[in-house]
Length: 69
Image (cartoon, rainbow, N blue to C red):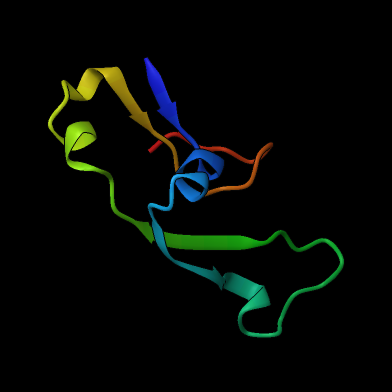
């Protein structure tokens, strides 16, 4: 199964919007706060038309903090 990560999405130029959200966006963070990042990306047509079981999409999280959607 091919897995798409934030790094592969960025390096291929598919990321069109990335934003910091959560406590850091509102200035309410402290030393224990994590960084919440949301984004929008567009996959090329050949990946959108594949059998969906062969392509795993991961949330736009940093390495070490990855959650499958």
